[in-house]
Image 1 (cartoon, one colour):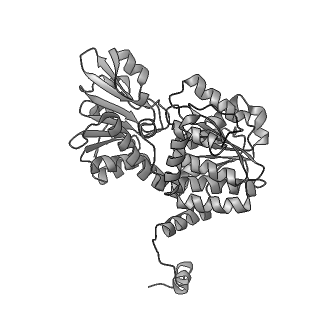
Image 2 (cartoon, rainbow, N blue to C red):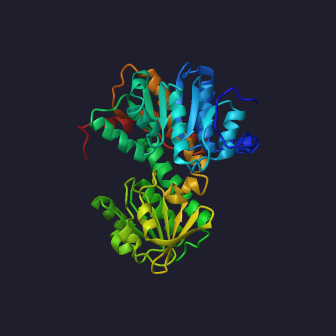
Image 3 (cartoon, rainbow, N blue to C red):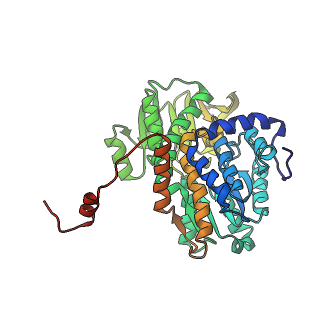
Amino acid sequence: MATTKRHDVKDLALASEGVRRIEWADRQMPVLAAIRERFESEQPLAGYRISACLHVTTETANLARTLKVGGADVVLCASNPLSTQDDVAAALVDEYDIAVFAIKGEDNDTYYAHIEAAVDHKPQLTMDDGADVIGVLHSARREQLGDIIAGTEETTTGVIRLKALERDGALGFPVIAVNDAQTKHLFDNRYGTGQSTIDGIIRATNVLLAGKRFVVAGYGWVGRGVASRARGMGSHVIITEVDPMRALEANMDGYEVMSMEKAAPIGDIFCTATGDKSVIRKEHIQQMKDGAILANTGHFNVEIDIPGLRSLATETREARAFVEEFTMDGGQRIYLIADGRLVNLSAAEGHPALVMDMSFANQALSAEYAIQNAAELERKVYPVPVEIDKEIARLKLETMGVEIDKLTEEQEKYLASWDEGT
């Protein structure tokens, strides 16, 4: 189908391959497919402009299709310069007539020009994965804030930024923290990122994980997932943390816990998963052994001190696709995957569709909820309503053929009473 939309993608000739891959992912996203079917008949998003800044993957494509058939006018841009799947971007434009501004490997100027293009759409709803669209709206485009009824946020890093805006009284419109839904972070962050991060590291390096000392920085849901999968591949997993409760949990889960200062000289593979900056610093890199591999699975490429790494190197070269080799003054070589950007999306394909089914079901239903409740929502960061969370879990179980028990009347009465004891 010839497009009528503006776009900036690598090559529309890639569209046919993108369509095949989008359809493959769709078969593993039955909850979102059910929502799309309802949206098509009910048109809950009719007349609304949505600007989405998300990773342009096959799973995101099915979310964009769902929003469009629900009546929305959608513009999509990338939320990371390396996460775009170019064939998917082409297919969205050419086959599904959705405006897309995203090219894998785009430079920073192009990346932000694409975000500006999404903001030029004059959205009434925003969808972010890292709060970049919201960031532009709150800095350079404040005159548009009054036109926006709500936004949604997909990832931990973005929610942190938005809650900071709310604390400062500077948040311009209500935002639903999709990341904090249980059907998102308990599954997407842990199982999706856990598997796809290991996939990205292996695809980029082809190293054997068995027997390696694998250092995971951060033991949130993402760190838990990465640690679990690395251990499953035979690695000796070390956790670094700043939170005593999470460090204690990691220790009780059977991992070795230590500071990054102590882990640096003994680690073989390092993966940051904190959402903070300079987690692996220059002084840590100086202590690392020859062949150490650095990767990041947090949203932004600030968790590893890349300028510090470059300042220590006497020579750099591309060792493999997405792997840069840094030769240190002492002769040891350090390897950085995908310029410290999200390794699962930069060097692999991101989360499996089966888990993104729940995350993007949350996005679609949160957009519908925001429209229905716009008059009551204040300029705050809201959780996904618990009824949406539970309905997505119910639908997911149903599509998996899993049956669960229901409370009897006697059980419901017992749980609601205070006067029946032992």
